[in-house]
Image (cartoon, rainbow, N blue to C red; front, side):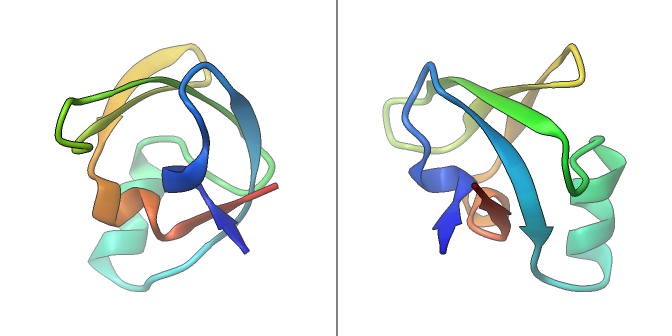
Length: 73
């Protein structure tokens, strides 16, 4: 299983599955990150948190704990 946190900067991937439940999963889905959507990793902060990503044309920041719950292919 590969997660969004493991994707290298500058690469894109497709969301395969969201893990987690309740408020955490809802927060991820509210960002527009759902199964089948394309996600690009733009940059990672010097200490690894947060990740800067592009989803559906929007530039977002996501915590690495949340990125760990997004399975990609």
